[in-house]
Image 1 (cartoon, rainbow over the protein chains, first blue to last red):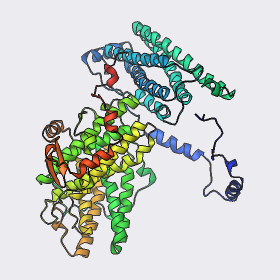
Image 2 (image 1 turned 90 degrees about the horizontal axis):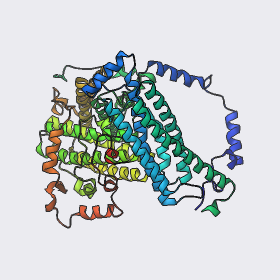
Image 3 (image 1 turned 90 degrees about the vertical axis):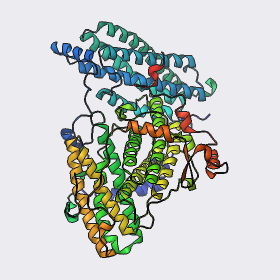
Length: 248
Length: 390
């Protein structure tokens, strides 16, 4: 199979058509903008809309009596439990999407196979199972606090928008396994940061048992990150050294 | 609220040229906080405006004397469409918007079917309803399995997620999508408003799917959009067929403007978000202005009273509410119906030489995307992974 780094017919650079590009450059140079200024006008518009806009949304009200009671108790200690719930829901959304992401990588693996120093199917399956497990851990955590784990909170919504580009890469039939792994690397980096922050938050709020569960998840995520990082690097190095043919 | 069209003149057409870009591109609604029916109203009114513009373009291409009037009214409609459709937020993904489109197709069609006085047209609506109901189930499965998202965050528990008439059997020969049309001279005015509204809604859905399908990298998603976009084309064919083709162009324009007033009025009366309600109020006033402009034109061009065509007082409006029980009842009683030409028959009465049987076999010859994406799928709050052990 051809690698994306093989020489091909890429036409995007201005150097592809020396005569036409000269015409283009000369034509542009002889023109005058129709209005004065620079890109700062766009920034002004963004500032103007941002100052006038509300938020993407807010947290739902407590879904159970238990949740309402807990919120009141937490409120007495001047803590805002909604922040913790929002962050738990963010990770929950991310882990659920992460499980689907590993399903996409497994399909890529089954279609294209791996490379020397790349993932095995069993390892991908193991990581998929761990993402699913973390999703369940977070559901339990939210339920134990009387929160509705199906609610889409503001941070969960934003995390889903962030992940949308990764899904596009993972599910494109034209992307290779290393390209898909690069998308997973971005996801795992964000995931690792997310768990780290969640553990700190749980500890600060006195949810020690929960923090312990999260540390288990964090260890698994660190393992994922280390592996994915290595797989991506292994492929790039072999490709650069022209060793991929031999590896395949 | 009774609205007397002989008295309510709205805002004159010339006074409607007050749009600026900033006025049109406003803060969108909140995907998380606004009521699902606010989103549904925005989507349906986008469809109504889109149809108004497309109709007026076709009219202008074939009717020289009214080109100038059409150009003026159409420009305002285009501004209205931007103002309304751009209220959808960017954190609502194309797939989430799709879920909302199907919720429109279910809840609005159910309401229209209940309003519709002509039993045959009501049957046409219920037939389409069960197909869109199935689309919602397929797209929900796709979103859960592709993006790990729960469709109910969009649906807000107003609408069921379960199979309807299976999409795989919905593909018919074009001749089995044609329907009998109402009679322009005897039809209840409400039938005209209902027919144009449903046709507009389905047309925007078809347009949307045909355009957003390529945004997806996932082949299963692309295939599903291709398949359901195909059904929406069938639905546009079905719903435009119920509209009397013998209406004059001017008659049709009158009905279009009246439909716009009727629909914006329903939005205004039922809107829960005060910021959006103010937009609906303005749109009602503008559409009344369009309607009176066209009524005057109609009097001059056709030398007839416009109230021969449209009602003097607007009839009962669409109800923006959950129609769960009604939809379940239709599902139970009518899921087995198929079409033979313009007739609805039980599946066991479809003749073996029906052109739709051969048509369906051909188009599904390489497999059925809608069957693949929803294989074994049962909606579960929080996604089907909830039921899967780690």
